[in-house]
Image 1 (cartoon, helix red, strand yellow):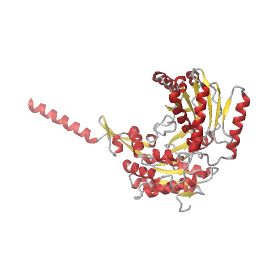
Image 2 (cartoon, one colour; image 1 turned 120 degrees about the horizontal axis):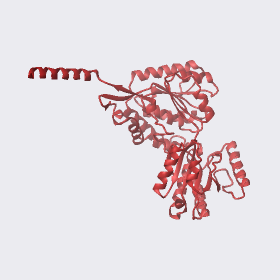
Image 3 (tube, one colour; image 1 turned 180 degrees about the horizontal axis):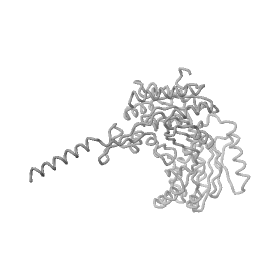
Image 4 (cartoon, helix red, strand yellow; image 1 turned 90 degrees about the vertical axis):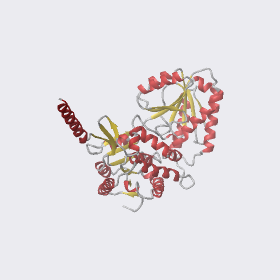
Length: 437
């Protein structure tokens, strides 16, 4: 191992040694929730774009680490009493969360901030974190953790964190890491998730899985046809497309427009302008050859497959809008490629969902219609129905589950003194009756 903040691991013994140290640290020092949130808040403030490279998702990470965001999440999942390290009374017993222990994190390699995002969930629960950092993310993760070390001047959180880097093919190290943890957060595509889930975790370990999902957006005819508001909605959908470069599960890959009387050409013109404006504000710095090839192929195949299809794009692979009709969801190209499909009825779209849709971003004029659509989507496996423009707001619950509560144990205490007091009260009552008689 090196003295770096992201350690290069070459054996299972190294990772198990790190886990033992993390567990001993957690037993020695109790992490106070408010203290943890205060440090994370300072950390988020320090992640200023003028001091660190601006990567996809970094603006979002700064918002996520705000005290107001973390306190609201913690309180919703564990209660106000837990935020202040107090027991919550429940009848004659009381409850309080305690950490599981060491949580292993297997983040996906395509989202730069995910090792950090995943780690904060277990830190909020008072746990220690054993984080595997994918090779492509070592650089930015190291810079971010250096900022955390500065924010954590009293070394409250840093001793609870071990960032490990090792080749994805080293199954022996993956297995050693799995054996050493009390819980896990697993992110990634289907193959990656399946491989990690098959590792020899202890029988008591709690495993949270955030596998591959797909997200879409939908607008009713009244909304996209109203010229006074559609420009704003176009800006919002463009913003959702640009964040994370459509790599996140919450990224919209398709925008469904309910057929109506509005001029589709006018809407598409404003959507194109919104994409151009977003591209000027956040231009692509580089594009991998494989992605550029996929984008060019998607453009060509879309136009060749149906003479009724239309496409809007610049000469470069910066962004792409593919326009057509139908409820069939195409394979995602990503890379700021949005497919716009006109459908007769949004409810026909929902009826075809099979549980793979994570988020629907909506813009619907009629509240009753939106509520009915949310009800139908919930039954079809959708976990988040949110306003277009807020599809990436990472909050609890996520993928239908809490983020912190599964990583703690809710301990119940029933005081023995309560029973003694009842017996004493009973004897006093009996004595009083005897004296009275």
